[in-house]
Image (cartoon, rainbow, N blue to C red; front, top):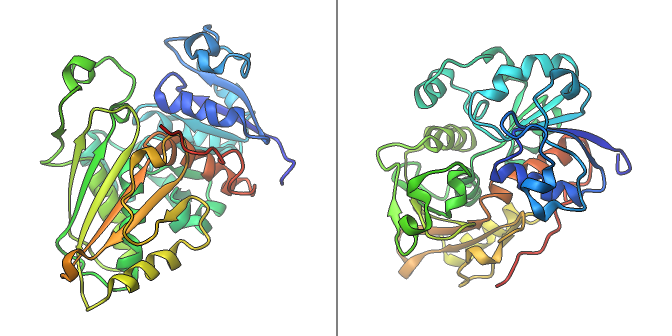
Length: 349
């Protein structure tokens, strides 16, 4: 399908993930964006709200129209939680594939989902047709799915760093700690006093320590990958930068494994993955190494030769953590080369 055109609709295109989707799709040779919806900005030209897209799109934002969206091959939902599941069945009945960048389909346990998102799920019967959209771990499922649950940004960085060691049986399933740090774009584009420059600049804080919505998502997927329940403590932090995410994952060795063997396990796990870069031993990944790109860069350590494994994982939270991964999922879903439209080199400085 290398020459096929994929007709695309985007529901909720005025946030950071929406504009990032548009940026990436503008250089995708197979993508034709035919509709982008926003109730609040209906009628406004896309390039007026996002001047970086001038010359790339003639579209204006429109009211969500099921009839227009039914004419698409793929519809991305860059919307708050609850929107995609309210429209999913109607679009699926028309043969449309759905990629949801929110959390409507990320958790298979419906009771856990309702607990963390504060509402009843609108279409639990759709879940058997859903694939979790982390291609490095669930590629076969994605190829056959009708709905893709694009992972959260923290789960993307943490699962990619932890799973190879869990699957290899090299680390214990309990006592895992994931310490995540994200730029403020992860909080979305809405007005929020806590995200003002004067409020978050020159400061650094933890949040969601008592419980974060990404925790049940990670626990479920880690359980699936490890074949047994996994104990994880997750603490996210807000850092004063716009883009970027670093996750440090701490695990306890289940057997005596050398630093070199740990490096080999990680390299082997991602040897054929275009968007995961296992860095040389002794490297320290930085968020600027992935800014604007769909890459995850990883490094593994066994500090002081002790019984702990530390993995450092960096992604751009808006690209591999959101819109870039969504486009990667579209490529897999539509049987296009997976790297299509996603070969942007990271921005430095």
